[in-house]
Image (cartoon, rainbow, N blue to C red; front, side):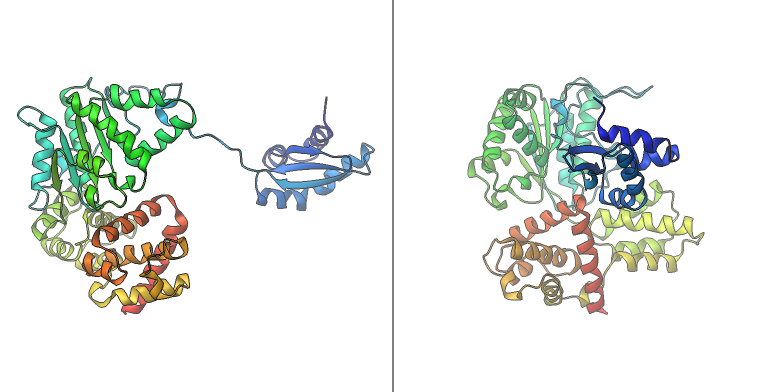
Length: 450
């Protein structure tokens, strides 16, 4: 049976341009037909307001012509459709393969390797030499007596690069081997989905029976997730008993991860622990030289020295500065000289020596309207814990204050400081609101340092 709305739509289609009908009218759906009204759903608020302003009269005109004088048009925004997120490996259909592209065998993880993350592109220095050597030995597998590696480093120091380099090297040597590369957050989400949808055996088989190499990133995400810790523990036992290779990365040692079970902590550190530190000056010089070559940038020794002295936070900061230098040179047709390099440095480095944690605390507390004393309280309420995490992130990234002193300022230990900062770093990647908050607070910090 043709509904009243379908009759109205047919009438409007002959009265307005085709593109206008397709853009504004066709997406509208009938939500409810009452005795005195047609309730119509628009895709969004902007669309609803536009239709109200430009097409409501013509809609009601047609209703009157149909003898429905007692009917009125009610426009609402349609509620978003609830879509169940299905993890990749639970999908029934296979991913389409692009023409002339051969899929890499054995790479059955939730995530694909970054093609740039290989051993030959990793810059080795005193800060990461042991981690690099251990990773290469594990990938080669000839004389290495350990099958488990735990890489410990803060964000941006190369642990993901080394982890994926291992995967690349193993697959190059043994293309048919089953490599599963995944973040801990993915593992948690996969497990929750399997439990809710009665597919636990499929989940277990994927990680326990169909995996020769497990690359598990961001172990610190397991904090407080007891059931997932238990499931992962069983999985690791089975993989270890069958001589499978397991590589973990984390910003914290398992013993320092809040609410981590002692049993799983012991399993995670059963192999070799390889820390990666901040690159020293000599290593930063080599990184800048290599990255500049990859970006096709010709840098003078003065510029390299300037970057190496000023860009001390992590490798991502160096890469960002070099990309910015290249962009300014190309877009503004500017010569790459020391003056331009200093402009880029000013955008990437705050005057850390002039910034105190007390100054940051004042900015954060004013912004979130919280008492500074409450940042140091034991309360876990979001109104206090979220500003506290923001404060820690800003102190860690924009001052020279050591972690222990940041922790003491809020009655926390250094591992909690690292964890709190990691929480914000992870959320910045997926939440623009938090990213904008951080950018705003950074500007305020700059103001107090001038």
